[in-house]
Length: 214
Image 1: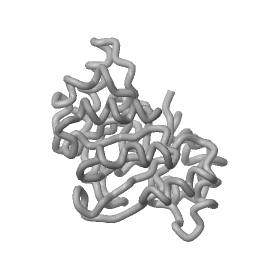
Image 2: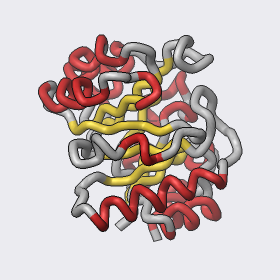
Image 3: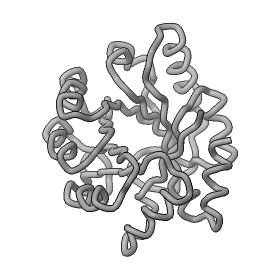
Image 4: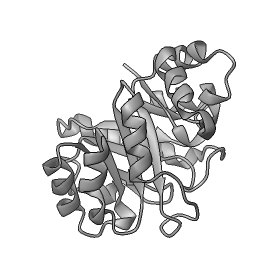
């Protein structure tokens, strides 16, 4: 089964409650929230207060992606704000086991994120401990970028590792997702598709999500 997580990075910021309702009414499974600090990635987006406000409106789980330096300093705060899943970049967390433990201790599912140029094998030591692996299929920091095809190799690696080791994590992708790239990802073992511009720019959002899921 394929799940879809519309990315609020591409939502209408002046009408966020309406964007959330559009996503939920269309059949979204999660709401993906990109948190950027202007340091780990060259952009600034949502903070803790925004996640709290989204939680007040949302009825589906919040999938919070921390694109932050020193993410360990913010885990408990985002958990308290209403995150259901918290994912951190392996590139930003040298003590990744500790951060995974922090996330779980805060009552959230723990995810780890790979940038497009990072080989999936760097996660071998933690794949048994995580609930989700997020493969970035564009360079993080900005929406609307083109899908990087070389990341499919990582998806296949993660899917094979899961099969061979009875792994229980889900594989998620974020960046440049559309009907064509979604099919490539699903064939590589991906479970969750993050769709930003493709979803919020669609005229028929129900058909958009149904198309991604089929």
